[in-house]
Image 1 (cartoon, rainbow, N blue to C red):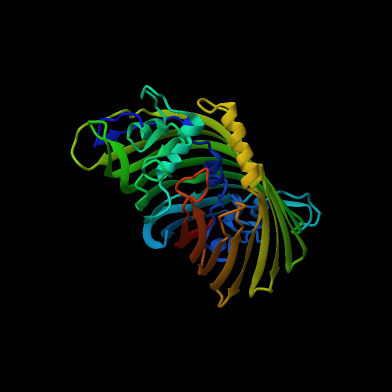
Image 2 (cartoon, rainbow, N blue to C red):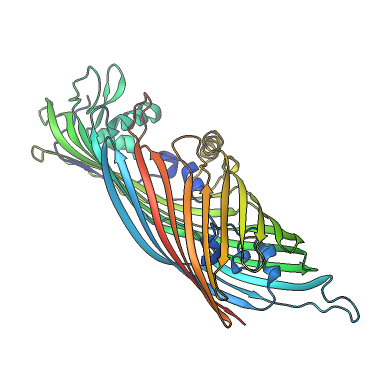
Length: 506
């Protein structure tokens, strides 16, 4: 072992993303967006591809704004309550977060087209409408906690793997995570076996005693988009539309993984001792990005009771700036006989990426004036996400990220069904169900959404109320071990959301 004169060690470090990881997980997070919508469309499971005549069409299928016969606007605030149940090494922990945001605000301007005198007023191009909207397509707010007792390994085994694959500065001047794990006494270089954990190893004097592990993660931010759309009505049979989206990403992460246990270190007299330690590995990240996309769509009415719709959304091309720092703090019991302090430093990385394209199709069947039932399906290939080089993001990392994306992600289908029933002349009842397919080949599940709501129309005004319950499960590992056996946390996330739309026709 390298001689270390310490029983209390403090080291805080920050390194670039080129040293800690790439962006394959980040870009997947930013590709899972779903357009914000009015409470009406939320209530029918977001099955809006073939409906038309709803302000959600501005950010969804732009052909739908061709149905409007007057100018109309609405706003839709939302309340989200998210709970995460984390199960880790047989122990369960709950955490919650609550947020209030605007989900959608849109307006459509009706523009009637003049038809030549003497021609059928119901034939040809009848209107060309324009829409502008703001929508929130992703909400990153959540708190995650899990903890348990690990009897098999330690995060220090991960640090040792980093040291063996990426190296350690023998002079103690390195700035990588494994360098500071080495300085902290959590790993050491042995004559046989290379770098090993001083907490768990075989044949080199580690205590190999259970460690108490816990993770606390706070995520904040969201994705928003300003949408611009145009839609036309041809003979009340065919509706065509096109649109442009200008997207924005804001994401922050604060995560601390804590471990308490025993390690074999050297005291000030170079004698091996087993000391209790409390070590925290922290990560802080702040990301901002802007991008744009294009969309086009159609809705066709073969008969008045049936509408068939389809839409295409191009990839969103983003330019990102990422500010990342990670740190390691270790405190040993038994008295202060030495201290090591380093950092922190701050590093910024810029890069580009594009999300997958999206293709959707849907059918709606109208039951006279009594309501409708509708369903649609959306195809997304998450393995087509691609990143590009930028400052602090070299070609080697880009290649590794894109390989990980192709290897670990897959294409999937998102399915939405719903319906609306007119109870009285001005009162509507709605329900829906949605499935967002799992984009990860392993350790994930589909996200299921159950929704319901009511709507009321009076004069030129309307109000819609919707409740949605969203549930999904994810498997995550706080660290990896080359030899296998890394612990896995199961995160069951449930979101209870309320939406209210206030609308007015002009």
